[in-house]
Length: 233
Ligand code: SAM
Image (tube, rainbow, N blue to C red; front, side, top):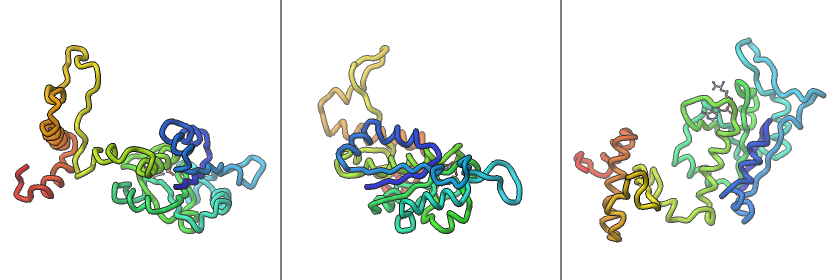
């Protein structure tokens, strides 16, 4: 899968693609990425990319000309182009699956109060929010979208790891333990030391249900009505 990110601050993007599991995916050729500095397309000697909003109000707006020129340079008109913004539709597992069908995605990292609406109208296919809060810039949001997508590519993470994660079957994940067996007087639940696979499986399922009920009553209610329409677990 290929990701093209347009940003005024390439450093965090480059650092992310050079780290850990992503670095290995890039090395193996499972992921390709381009990071384009929007400032390289500014029109004046000061390399200005922001200006005051028409109509007044707080903050600045990312100008249309440099951003449009950066988008043209990567052929964005023919590619699925995303603008991560709090004003977009929510990033969900279902949306992640849809986005995963694209061979290549272009992501615009916003700054200031946001980008000129005319760029959205002309180039953007999808406005996506990563949550109901406001970040100071779009780099983290764009990388969240990249991260949630690339880890599902064949060869990045084992199928088994992906199958046992939170949100699979509508439940959160069960707790994990590793050595030592006792840590600050706290032991590992007996069942995990039993070697009895069926009992371990049952314990983990019950833990997932209990955790979901406590942490995410909304998910729990939805799971309950799907798995036991009469209200019994
Ligand atoms: N004025 C905007 C608003 O109220 O919706 C917020 C702008 S924010 C300070 C700057 C940039 O961060 C945005 O253009 C967007 O690219 C990014 N951003 C902030 N919060 C985000 C979120 N929840 N989801 C996706 N992108 C976000």
